[in-house]
Length: 308
Figure (tube, rainbow, N blue to C red):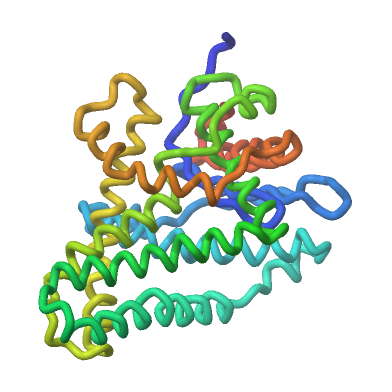
């Protein structure tokens, strides 16, 4: 096997007809254009966590990472949609935030208000906060899994999930120490422990225990408001679990007991990835590799680009 350069931890996201990869110092985006070419975009990362050390503290860093990921991910998603539609780069840069804001409102209505209404209706029948919280949480999880299952039937979403798989297959190939080629990457699983799908599901499951502390006396609006206030805490815990579980892919057999336990705890998220990922085609793997190379090429001044 050829010598493989060790690279910094990598994250990523599927976008429209492409993949975004994020390294320690930069972001690379690769999108397949209508003409079949691969359009590349790369830029350095200006992380708030690097600027403000307090944001690197446990739990807090999870919330900071979530905010950064949502901001960057939405911007790259808008950009990729424009490029995939054949628009020029100037038009692609002009995407707005309205879709994200509308999406947040819809998600709150579906995953917060509806379960809270059910909780309120069942309170006279089941006078047990933990049992009610479990029912509320299972409704929330059921809505989430059902939503993913429904949209996975759409052809456009199937392709998006294939690019999600391509992202994971390429990262798995690099973290396994294999030479990064399309053939090698195709042999790897589209499942990865450090995945947004796992993060979301584990967050939903942890909410069951945390939200049971709210008791049964709150109104629907008060309960929704309290849950939104507690959400950063739950997200911070989920981030730490996913981060710890991810050490198993980076360190393999050398991963500690805590990392292996975290991997078991986050297994439901990996099972759900069977819905949100698909094995990629060769041309999709090529896009993911191009994205990774673009991200790894962004390094501090005087440093050589990392090329896995």
